[in-house]
Image (cartoon, rainbow, N blue to C red; front, side, top):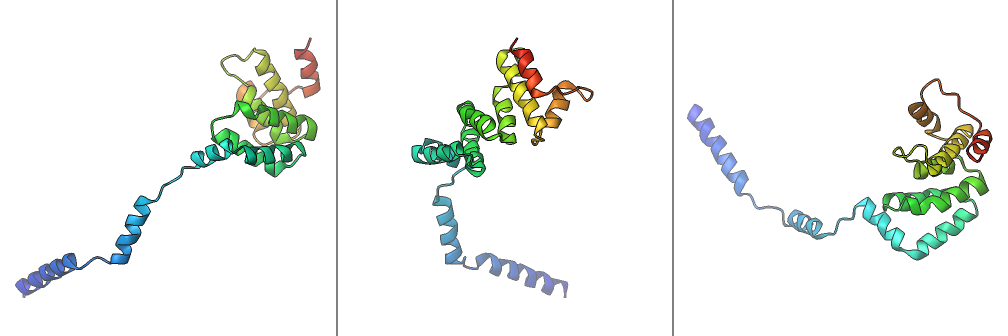
Length: 164
């Protein structure tokens, strides 16, 4: 009896291994291997190189369109062109009073290597503005950088202080 079960098992394995593969499945596997895969950063880089896309989004940002701002930010940040986005962030912050833009300006300008530089002080000003407007991450960034007990100055008072 044991021999019969053993022979039956071996025969089943041999038959299943020799079974023909489904040609439709094979075609799909070959097709998927030949397709070009695009990484997200590559897609953003393509958008960055597309002057028409950038021009349209920049125009909308000038008009205060927050969705266009976020799309443009993603394109610049994920394509590796963060510093080139600074103009748009300042525009949205100063002209349209957009809290996320305040935080973005801070992110672009701040340098932990040179915390006393003019650009880092300007970055702090925008961080304090973002905090006043309850922008995402502003409070946690302040606590992380300055400590839990830090009394956040009013951005206008800080602006006067750094410009004396």
